[in-house]
Image 1 (cartoon, rainbow, N blue to C red):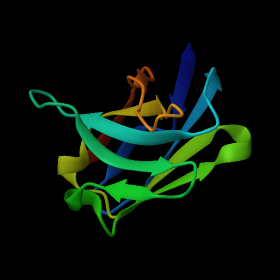
Image 2 (cartoon, helix red, strand yellow):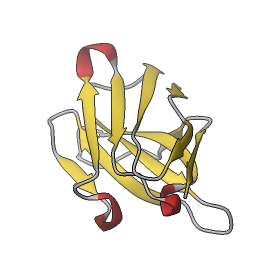
Image 3 (cartoon, one colour):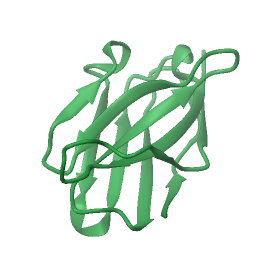
Amino acid sequence: QVDLVESGGGLVQAGGSLRLSCTASGSIFSINVMGWYRQAPGKQRELVASMSNGGTTNYADSVKGRFTISRDNAKNMVYLNMNRLKPEDTAVYYCNLKRIYQTGAPSAGYWGQGTQVTVSS
């Protein structure tokens, strides 16, 4: 079992910045991928950014150059620094963790409860 707790969402004006944090606890495994997804009303949940504990990152095209994902492996935390926010970034942001087994296969994803990010125009 893995528990994920997010914090840092809120209301910000377009062009502003926010930082999201997520703390993982439980049976995390030493090799894993942590990331952030978001879901806007009426839309499917989509990947925003992910990062392996080895440092490999992946970003959605829509956030490249504006968002930065980082991790503190010692604290089992992942962060998302969001700059130059746009109204279309408004969504519920979810922390996600996938454990990587010795075979290299990922586990099913574990999810946090979500944190609302609202960007006003």
